[in-house]
Image 1 (tube, rainbow, N blue to C red):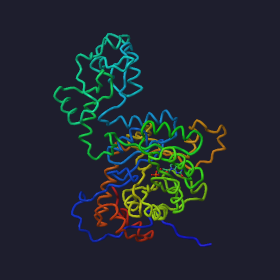
Image 2: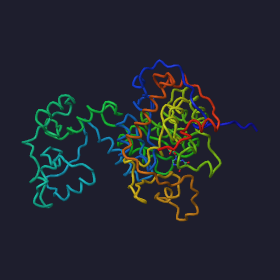
Image 3: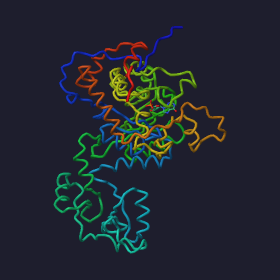
Image 4: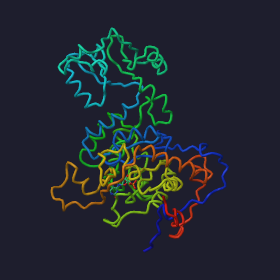
Length: 472
Ligand code: XMP
């Protein structure tokens, strides 16, 4: 039997190339997620329940990347998280939240909590606009039993506009009249949408954000391959998730292939990421099944123990390199998922042929991750866990009663609280820009084309990190 050597990020370095790049700002780090979706920042947040829900996905899209919302929750919960992202930065909100004139303030307060939204349009049963209820209208209400119709600003005092108003005209109208909400109505005064001042301002200010054709932030959502997965896909497509991520631990399997085929047959225009695989053959089979992007990584993740539990996996640089040969041939982007511990690892993954890097552990502990912050011996922490860890398995609705039936392929960890995720993303983007100047690459294709890897020894690795001083 021939046994090949396989390498990972720490086994190699990239050889510096003669560079004519004058500034790190002169390089273009944009990359394709699929043939139809281009990101300005080639970073994706992992679909793990301690990494990506709506807050992380919003931060990722605002930074020019994308977040994939995990699937370890009910369909309703996941859909709500997708909707939160889609509503975050929309010039036109197609289905604004509404209340009835006969609702009490107490009922409105419940909706405020449920929808995380502080103002509502007031309509009758025919969707005709009757008024608007904002914080200002309700702050000084006598009690919670007061009806909306007594508090709202009535339609006679509202400025409205037609649905097809241009963003520039809407901005002008809102600025001239000093209003924060602009309801959009048809000729019969039926509500067709809403524009908010915050969304207008954000859309003008965030030129780098990842947006869909309507100016909304983009988001991906993960699904499995068994049980009610098509019900989940239907609901996510309805909620207008931009990408469906078919993500299982062993993606080179009949189940994953058939799930991708089923989704692409039902929704040919929906973008599908398929994974996870660790070989060229795995990538090819998922591409043939219809995947628009391939996710690569079996066992390299910071909370993964698949390799020690099962004996299977491929060191990540080799896995990316082999799968990339096929992906490049078919012009299908590749996400390098797992094992990235520092910005240089991401540069190596992109140079080896990945279009994007997925980060899990590196984003954990940040403000935008789900879950509370805990204090232990005066230091703040958040929890990070593998999706095949014991606690993750136990928290699923279908968890087996008998704990001894669960064989974990992941671990739980506490990670120091690290503040806003933008701090981390800034380091990764800075490292990549700098790396591209060492590689004389103006864009990611040039980085790949000029990449010259050398294999290093343990001594080389030791030399590569800070050494022989007392690090402060
Ligand atoms: P990092 O290194 O960025 O990796 O934390 C994130 C990726 O790890 C994978 N993942 C797992 N792999 N057991 C595994 O073998 C697990 O429990 C587990 N949970 C997450 C996943 O691909 C993720 O994106």
